[in-house]
Length: 417
Image (cartoon, rainbow, N blue to C red; front, side, top):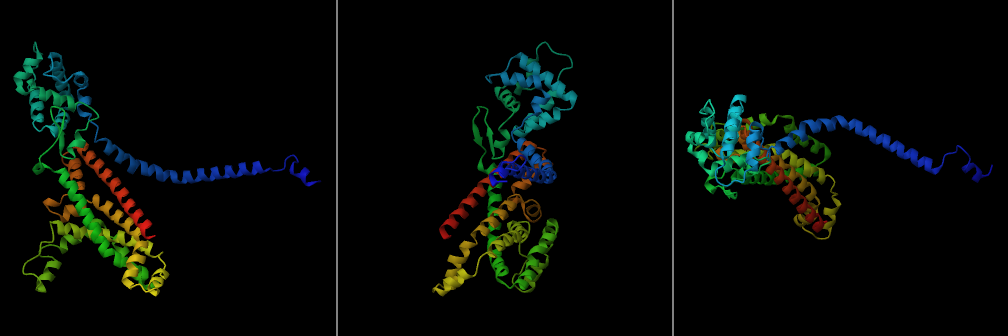
């Protein structure tokens, strides 16, 4: 049979059939890979992405007053905010307070309002306790008689803002700002600033730890990358072993070593280098020592992985052309390791931003980082909204620093590549 006849014979495979079969096999392989990764995706969604999303959403949610006093919330949203409301609004306030007290939600509402105006909790709780059992002819004079603050427009404007959801109050409070009764944004005085100073302190500590890790880790990574393989593998154990030890154990070990009567101070005094114990703990020094020790292996491994791929022929070529070894190292070797330096510095910096245990154990009163304030708001103050706002700013700062690191490393690669 001729070739053309065989190619078009009934039942013989065509080029289109082969392509369709190939695409079908690819889709089947992709589906199998997705099914294999599905448990991991579900785990990440339920234990990582969803909790973080819910916490960040708390930074703008404001459900305490709307959920406990829905009728009053609707009336406040419709109110124009001028002067003191009419009798109907006072009646809704009395009914809302009575209902919230009966349902046990009055404490939640009072705590939420007290976050923004410290004296509002006492006002709300006192009014709720002293509400008359029988409804008076008019609620407005009755509530004003209980507390004169109910007759001031500022109190009602604050209540109106507290009933709005979503709200910017938590995001403003996280940078030591608040809304004035006139609706403008005002920052608290510098001597009363807490969170702005904590953000600056967190970035400063993280940057210092990153610099210390770079200064200490770069020579170690270079040594590991250029030693014979047998010696390098032995020394690499000293870098990897800390990963096998709990973070709490390593921090507690520094807690013991840095004490005024600890090993380090005893050694320093026995050598005659000091006449009294050095202040190495409960201050910035202890925080930097502990965090640098914990985060140093991350930077060493990041730089080492890049250095292993740098061929030694470049250095030999530069020196054969008359370059001094130091000049060849700075202009030929270092630029090739900048991707590892950038990745390692960014990793250390981001990890340092969220550190909690080490600053809490080794730091003093002036070394609180944002992570400690977030933990305090969630565990002690029960102010999840403010904790979510602080976390949101921390995520934003991390994203900004990522783009900065990426930009700097990219420029350096173009310049020296």
